[in-house]
Length: 168
Image 1 (cartoon, rainbow, N blue to C red):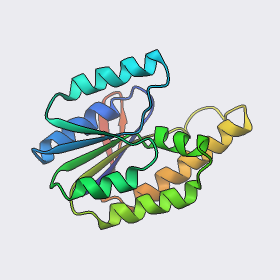
Image 2 (image 1 turned 45 degrees about the vertical axis):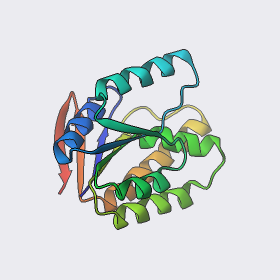
Image 3 (image 1 turned 60 degrees about the vertical axis):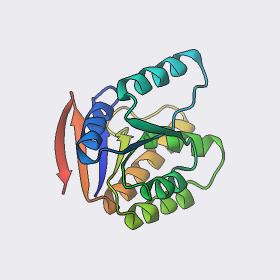
Image 4 (image 1 turned 135 degrees about the horizontal axis):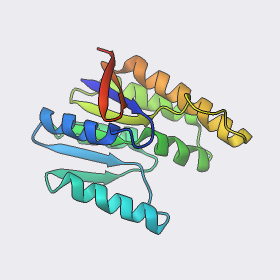
């Protein structure tokens, strides 16, 4: 089972995804795409690790989530990737081929037999970004979400901590 969990900033999507992953398998792997590039982000990461507790194995993968999913899938666990939005930002900043990386991810999702949950921001519902980079990112995020949603068994949208099933 693969599940994409979409929502806005602070919508409750990560908390919802964590609870769902915890209900699926006793072994759990968290694939983190965030990087502690400043004190505020380091604090957030530490808080999220503490919130998950010791029953989670955490893998930091700012770029290589497809490989990490494949490796973790052999461990008969539930896998939570949080989040695709930061992953996309990391890919763009590293000047990697976003389309090729998204293709790798969707192929990986179609090939694994353990539950994989992916958290992503829905950024296309707000103001049009002012800068070309902002517009490029918004457009790439929309294409990424569509590609992942197409191969996932379930898609949920979370607003105010409440999930709304879109697919599945």
